Image (cartoon, rainbow, N blue to C red; front, side):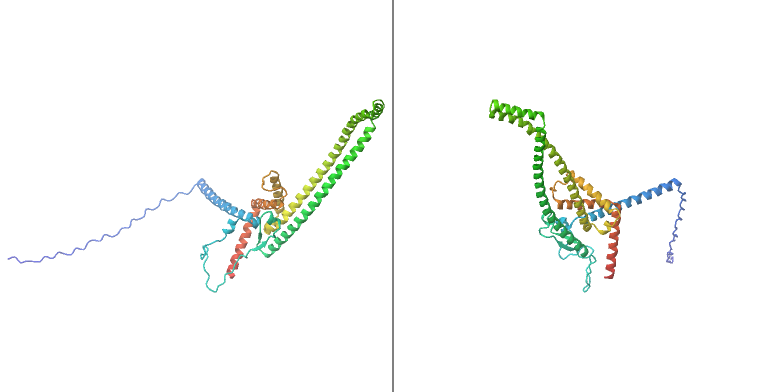
Length: 356
């Protein structure tokens, strides 16, 4: 009997194939750029940088122009919507980016609180423009605004009183000049008429008609003679009145020029309160201001402000402030000064915040 034998299956260990990392194919060496390619690449990069810089400068300039115009525009002219949009948040909410301070730590305001300057009830700014107050950024500016309001109010009353006196005086002078011109014209016409041969012949004819026909017929004849004299006297009067009217027109022109200079001077004084000092100290500020005065006057002559009534000096001042602000915002030097002032305020704010 065959002996059963147990045949054991030998244990087979699988072969481990070693991991083969493919060798990287060496990159093909790049050929050096040609001069034209290098130049094209530099021009492209410069163009991109210049476009980005111009875009940023334009956006910043627009913001600065709005800021400058807002600084020149009187506070009383701001709309209620602008006032309501300043930092309004829902009750119990804090503006974005503001964190709560730990208990016991007092919050120190970097920017000083604005000072409200009330405008008197019967001041032209309130009665004519509807403004009830102006806002000062500092005590010094508050004193300037109050001085300006008081000076303007006093000058307005003085000017109105003087205008009334001048108008009454001018009416009396005009009446006197007309009477005097009529008297001189009659006297001159009489002398000229009596010295003519026609006058002597008319006297002889009058006496002849009176003796032959009668006094009534002679009177009718003399009325016809006087018609010629009246025509001569009227001619003399018209010549004198023409001289008087020319002289008065010249006076009115000089008065208008003086009034324009006075208005420009007052506008300059008012702008000295509204326009920031660092802009007024620029070398060309006076030239820009004078140019704005002439341009604004031209626009008034062209009736570009139809809502302004004759004699509405206060309304003209308000429109000029806006006009001046837009004019200054176009100047590169003003933009640079505005940037420098903004940067200085930022530095001061950071310094104050650090100390706090």
